[in-house]
Amino acid sequence: MTLQQLQQDLQQLGVELWEEQGRLRYRAPAGVMDEARLQQLREHKEALLQQLQAAQMPTLEADHSAREEPFPLTDVQAAYLLGRTTAFSYGGVACHGYLEFAQKDLDPVRLEQAWNQLIARHEMLRAVVLEEGYQRILPQVPHYSIARHDLSRDDGSALQALRERMELRRAPPQQWPLIELCVSQGRDTSRLHLSVDLLVCDYQSVRMLLAELQQLYRGESLPAPAQISFRDYVLGERRLREQPRYQRDRDYWWARVDSLPGAPELPLLGPPSGPRFQRRAMGLEARDCNALRLNAAAAGVGVSAAILSAYAETLGRWSRRGHFCLSLTLLNRLSLHPQVDRLVGDFSSVELLEVQTLQGGSFGQRSQQLQERLWQDMDHRLCSGIEVLRELARRKGQDAALMPYAFTSTLGAAARAAAGPSCPVPSWCSASARHPRC
Image 1 (cartoon, one colour):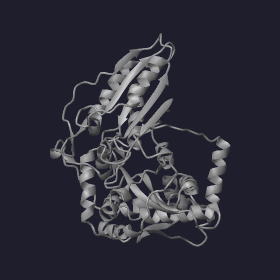
Image 2 (cartoon, one colour; image 1 turned 135 degrees about the horizontal axis):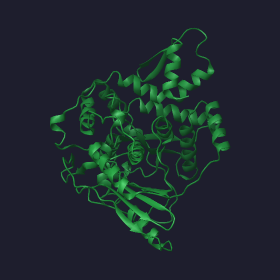
Image 3 (cartoon, rainbow, N blue to C red; image 1 turned 90 degrees about the vertical axis):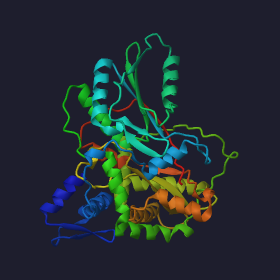
Image 4 (tube, rainbow, N blue to C red; image 1 turned 45 degrees about the vertical axis):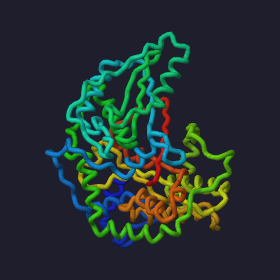
């Protein structure tokens, strides 16, 4: 059941939901909230709390006259930018994604036309990051020409070289464009190669762009673009720091900083050297996915929480200490305006999650405890994990704020996106990232 379906179901049954000090509360007629509906509430708790809390937040307004004026980076964007430098261990890496799509009869001319329509539609596709640490939307950019590579006689080496170049692309952030497309045409198959600098868009934004690119390529029309801009959103989010709730969230984290543990201490072959990325993938059969979902539900946890718990316990098995912190990357679009979900930009946030793997009980019970900790932390998310890490570095030193073990789940985002236009499935993908925390 989707979030929207659950809300409609509860509304028709006379169930009232509200948020109280970060907790989800409900009032319902007798007998309505059976175990099945309670489990649905647990699975959608995070999204419901975000909506209910957003209703208490000030709504941002569009500032059309200042759209081309420089505006601040988000905390995560600033961290990504710093991660390009070698000022920190594991640094010198741009936060970047690469996607590849194979299609038999790809029309490069039609594709180029569709991409330029998206550049005109979404302001962050015209964004650059200034050396002073601000970002800016360029009012006009040249027509984007998609490069074409004839690989009809290639033995595979030219394709691999092109793939590696796009995977390792590191464009200066102050130089447009920050997203590069090219097309390779083989004997039987054409490929779209997409290199994305994640300074300008997050995972959800990339999915939106791909879905809209597919619609425009097919000649379909799109709804009117959002009236607000990513600039409006960033400035609106910063104004939340003037609200009492931000101070409450900051006090929550500041009270815990001194007791937060460091990163997992795993046995290493040698001292850390230059970062190298290797992608490992594993898929689950539909039967196994369904079993995972059912077992997680029986334990009262979501699928993402179950996988997170397995990841944490695997690290804990090898770590010198079972008490450590993980870095979680979250998709955190605050509902400051009805059109926020139509914007392209980097809405991601980083949160610290304190893990204690030496607790007893079953795996399901430990997963539930970890999920409760995450929910409690998310209830105080207006003070970001980047801010917490800066304070951690100030109190304990830079090394204490290095959190190289990260967890990112897009399971919920994929499910929410399924309700909208379909997104093409890549035949190849990779990503590299480094998030220094101060």
